[in-house]
Amino acid sequence: MLDMLGNRQKELLQLLLRNKDGLTADELSQQLQITRNAVRQHLAALENDRLVAQGQTRPSGGRPQQLYVLTDAGRECFPRHYSWFAQLLIESIKQEAGADALGERLGRLGEQVAQQVRSQHPGLPTLPARIQRLAEVMADLGYDATVAESKDAEGVIEADNCIFHTLAMQNPEVCRFDLALMSTFADGPIEHERCMAKGEHVCRFRIGGKG
Image 1 (spheres, one colour):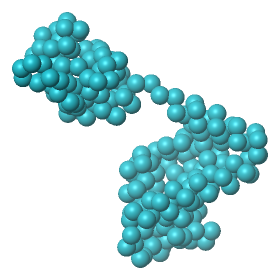
Image 2 (cartoon, rainbow, N blue to C red):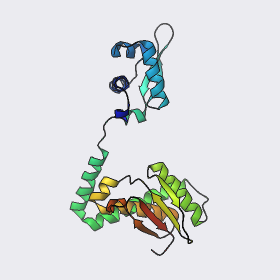
Image 3 (cartoon, rainbow, N blue to C red):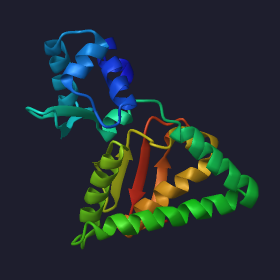
């Protein structure tokens, strides 16, 4: 996301990153050495993208000064090494306990997450209803998942984005998390028909068929 912004907007975000309590438009103008109107235009664009928000006001002896702060989304624009850290954890567990134990642990984790998420979506008595809601939940998580057409009574979900792609490429056991999450949420057996970690263009899951 940071690469898509202009240089001034990057500099503005960096200033707010370093000043956690926030800065006023005038302070940003002074530090960026641009006009106050230009700062306000950048702030408006960044607020629209939900990268910056209005924070608290600062007493000034007159009219309170409005501070601007980074949002959580704004902080996420800066480099994070989640995948590297996750890879370290996965490799550590595999070395200590073995690949089978890693798969089992990820499966249990998927079941736990599914139960937590399922409790937030009550009233899904039929398999089609559960599959549709599951696809929506997965889409919210970043899988870009949709319910695919199926000629039989089973349900099919296709995901165009594997949110653990790098991990799954190096550690196929990671797919156990997805399978356990989906099976537990939909309350049905699941077949992993296609997998991006194996070179396919999409992950395809058939739910409700023979496990």
